[in-house]
Image (cartoon, rainbow, N blue to C red; front, side, top):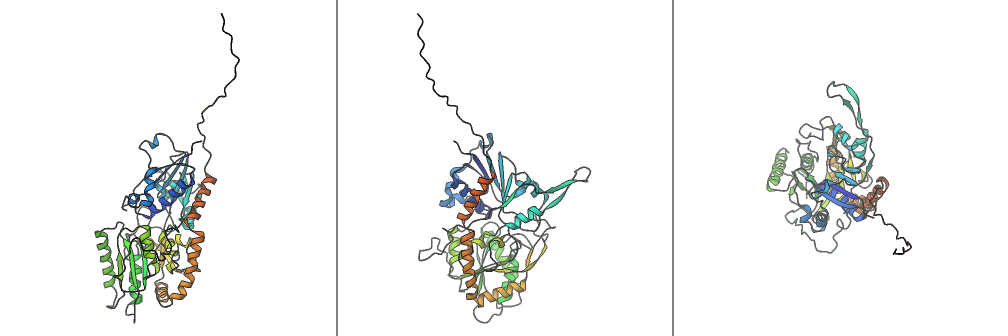
Length: 432
């Protein structure tokens, strides 16, 4: 019996968080060996293209590229991995997969997109809650009168993003594959931030990088004795000379705003890293902790991956990543919700929505405490490592995906060849 035809449209070949998410989900579906998988490769914003060809472990996905005439017949299964307003029902059964939303509300167009699918998968409880609670007035385009309500009426389920424990693991005595060189960093204690520095005035970009840098300077300025450093694995969307110079200029402006000439160092790593290279960075002995003051996450993949090191994590205490950052084992910073600033607003982050701003008092205190009382922090963070390995690995995610597919997808009718039995008919005598 032939397998159901499963066409998946996603940015799996891009250097993006959505690309990584798509590759993991596609790999799980292929591994299940229950479907005839065909892939449609889509771009993702301005992020770089050609990930699979550059990474041998992922080149196998290129063997599943759909043919040009893929849409001449309707797929049994259709999945789109993107933002919900782009969802279209193409197959006999349709799955929308999205990391979701970073703020506390969404747009009616996103809910309408979710409602076009048979079932929707999101990465976190935060995204599920926002979509489930969203309600909008439906207005007549001519009379401008309310004619109904837009709300979610299709199933929505949380399918987390599992970490690959074959990649994110201690290096042991093996030689590094990428050779991450931090010899130019003199400090032996470094905080690490990983993420894009996106649009927004100081204190209003989504990852809140500007606030992190400013408060790091303020925390350790004029500090007697050795100081920690802050490493930014960062870009403005693409890794390039222009990106590097733009970030260095932003850092310089923040540095000049701090009233001191005795400041800690902030270093920039700008470039494309393989998963193995990122793991080497995480495992590097100079990298002692990860810190983020993010205003909102659909999931927060770097935080999950860094958890496997057993090193401390200091993070905003709101949105997608709190699904897997156990408050008993990590430092979740308090704060308050504030409106998305107009400098950061876009087609899916509306000004009317709110997201998180950390308490800088608690951020400074946590940075100081982690530096001074590191052993106390690592006693907790080692438990976070085990918590993630047990509950949020790629293998656990794979089982969840296969279970969800088995539970929700229908049985498709198949063309069956008609094989008639051979009849033993009596021979007829030939007439003379």
